[in-house]
Length: 250
Length: 369
Image 1 (cartoon, rainbow over the protein chains, first blue to last red):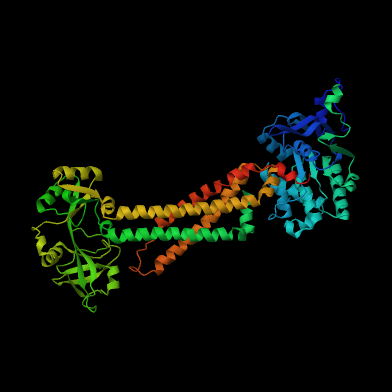
Image 2: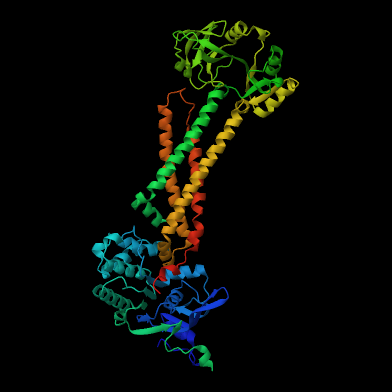
């Protein structure tokens, strides 16, 4: 369960974390603004198993983005432990996090997403060019992913020549290019109508299941949560059900 | 880097304005350089054309051709110095020339040189009363086979043919024997009263170290002479240093403008790409990679502009009739201009480095909540 907190001394979190796609333990993010501390993420505990699709729902400013950024290695937590695919990134430097993002996680963003002057296929290959540079192997993988996503005949098109749904599928393909352990979706259907949104969500679910990749889907949209294995609510930097630590200790 | 390269190829229109502006700046840069080279060439080509290693002036002359006088004894002393292979006297007189067919007051400004070692392009020493003319004198109506009349004494000199790039002090050079020079000088400048064998300077060909021989010559003449290399003698021509520094300043400012244009344009592009760079950083792009892309684009745009400008500059050089404008664009000037522009491009694009570094990958994911 997502809200399981490792309070039981008999469980060894390290062993358990290794088998998970994401293990977040008492993750906390504090921003210092002049004299005030802003707690964006407050002792969040979250476990996601491989192949599991989790919806993350909450009002604006509740800390969903911060949680995703920390899980994806874009931000580092102020304290707590973050393990992704067996790699403990809690104390990674910026440089290590960049390398980690290249190889371990995938992102699908809400808006400006694809490189506008690159074709669908080249947008997938960007991931390889920025990272491992496997060349021919990457090209083969890109073609396979595009075929899986039903985009083979669109591979040579620029984003401007694609429909909104197709663009989002290309973005999903890009997120899968580095064979990630975890893919983070930031409102993947917000720019799509209901029918297309459902198609895209169906695709996300089937791709994650067939590849055994974990996913966190940030959304405002209740229609999206139907496609997820479970829904986690966030409010004021805390995950639902999580008791604030001060009260737990009391 | 590959992304930046593809953007250049697929969206050339985006870089069109910057390329156009940089082309104009590059052309201005090369035009200025061509003017500087042309101006200096016009006043110093006669010295530059000397086929020797050293030019020996009398010390009192402060390295001026016109003031320098070297008598036969001093010339013999120089000839006997160890390492001196060949010595030739040289003298010059600046006069107005009457050209057949031109009006009586329409004088051509000429500088008649007498020489013993033939300068670059001059086939040999002409007979008494004959001379080769610099090709810019064609503008004045001078033709091969004509006899022109020099100075108030109207000393006749017959033109044997033309040579290129040998002007002195902005005047068309005539190349004649020392005898002809003395004749013209004595007829038109009786007050000069030169002793037999006296010349103005010596052109010296050297075996071995030029600097050592120069030192030995000046020592042998008890400091009566000052020996300069040909390029030092060019710089010693009055006004040359000043022209160089003036133009160097203008060229530097122009290069700085190119730098500012590159800086502004690519900073603007970087600002425009903030969200794209955010996404790319989130998927694993390093700042170094993104910045290298910016520098690559700046270099390519500048190189294209510089090459177009170089071509246009050469075209100008071909189109402008010789003598109409002191403009002379050579390969070395084009290459220096291109290098200057490329350096400006690198420094200019560095202004966007801070912005690239500042872009937060979290901005890609932060837009929704």
